[in-house]
Length: 364
Image 1: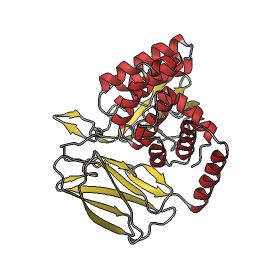
Image 2: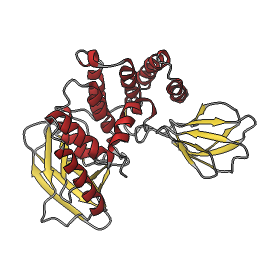
Image 3: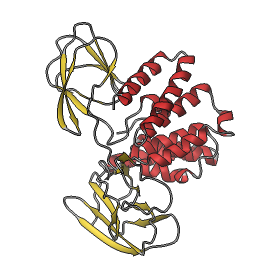
């Protein structure tokens, strides 16, 4: 699970055009027959590998078959399993002709419910822990308050335990409850799900995937503690120390800890690199609107005055990913802006990857 701090910092710079797709907006496919000729898969995380039978690929990956190549992908889409033939040579996106349904729809159009501030819809936005590992067996459960709520019921469960507690609503946009020591103990390595309810509203009402959390194993917890101690001995300035710790947490999949280390975005200042870093973490846990707000800030003065052309290109590409969740035209616009900048920089691989993303979006 550990990525390594230096590798992670490098990955953040390129994540705008090569990072993972937002959860729930991808087609998952496998090769159902052994490819008779060579096909290289350029995965969206930057990895490359020659295709083989039963290999998994998804939206955002780029396929580069040789001339005469023929194979079939089996893709899981909104209409069920779809067979997609690959017959042409040259770079091409994973051919999901029937994209998955958006997880939330309003009047037939996708809508993003993850907005910071009280909401009046039937979904409570769980801020943490979601799509993350956590260090503590007593994690903090945080969510965005909803208008008119007088109390909330918090549930933590898996196949072995089911705990719940009701707490009164408090002032403020964000509420938090710590899993108590008196509750059934959560085990290192265990996978759980947190749900918050109030009346008919619930954090799981949109049935979003990957909303669970995993307690860090004891070995990984010791590693994190040791690495954290090394950072503390460097005596970095406060802002640099927070960012270094957040990077360390993210390297271990501790996204909730990384977000809290940077104060939910309040402590990122005007550094566009740090803004993009936190936006990438928000993308990992599906809080797309919060990520968009940060990237948009990175493109405005004074942050944009400190940035490089490559940094601005990365911001537009990251916005393209974040908008793919709810606004395809906006995603296309941002990807095109990123493509222009990367082309001017001579970044041929980035341009090729963006072309594949644009091809996927325009086919929807």
